[in-house]
Image 1 (cartoon, rainbow, N blue to C red):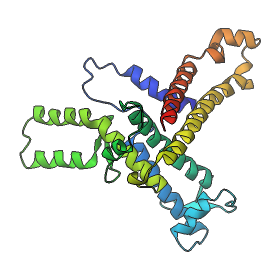
Image 2: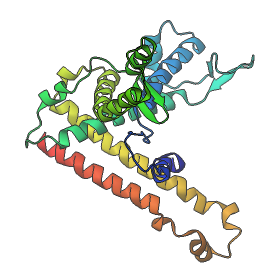
Image 3: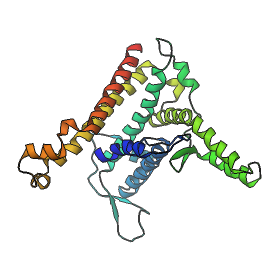
Image 4: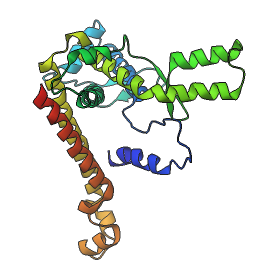
Length: 284
């Protein structure tokens, strides 16, 4: 978790563009990765259904969601590699439910940001409905810029039919996508949240939103704890410790765990998110 989350900061720091007129997405929870998580959920459901000889996908979904039932036999994947050997899917229930949790967290983060910036003291649920998208769009990653697939297809068609005849016109389309991206991301997040919770946006109420935000706070805390624990393992590794005379010398060379700059940044991120989320909970 430490390495995955640190990539966000590393890539931002490495972005040395003089003019940053294109929005490059660095977050691991973004429209393209979330769509891949949805695809992964379907793949896991299909694998469980076939491996356990279940009648339909609905039974596989119920088994994966049921905390009391365990999957005691191997779950095999199809068409994963060019080989005749069997490919076993490890921890299907854990992975399945974690992906669903992360999708909810992604959607709730965008929901929290939307509600936090509303001017009124009370939450206007109609504002959420106003930002809804009819469906969860597919996105393409073109050099780090995320674009709705339908928009990219439209661009290619306009190039082919001569509507766009020069590079400046094409670049203007990229800039237009960039300006619209955060709005597109928010609509995608709300559509994803509605889909993963099986609750259309017009049916959301205060209690529903409270439950989402409360879970999202716990998820953000869990992410920070996993970041911290991932790094702490490095300090507790005897093969890393063996090159130093003692802990004091190790701290002198690599720095103390509590002083790690990335962990401090993530702690601040956690604190800021909790403060923002709790402010919204007070309004509900």
